[in-house]
Image (tube, rainbow, N blue to C red; front, side, top):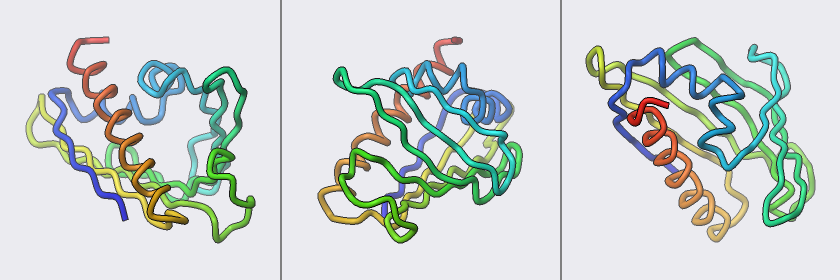
Length: 140
């Protein structure tokens, strides 16, 4: 399991918006385009280009409570494993307002297929969350 906690000097509403607004996601998530209806049970798709190759990863939103939590399952073609339900990771973001200008964000990921994939995912999430923090704290 991956668990990452980060404090962001930004209001809760701004951190939440960065998790669910495609234009903001694209800014900190390596140019990834995200498409979803943002409702529990709806699909979520991630598309873009990585190292010159197009990709499309996917999942389903499992829980969505505005300004509290977002959870989805997720399969990436980068894993090289079959697109089967048992191969989907479970991603969960939980938000907590520390004060009007400080938000705690916790990310957890369950069901990584191999220890190497878990290590790669952990580093990837650290980078993405640091990008998110920089974007919000620098006023973008």
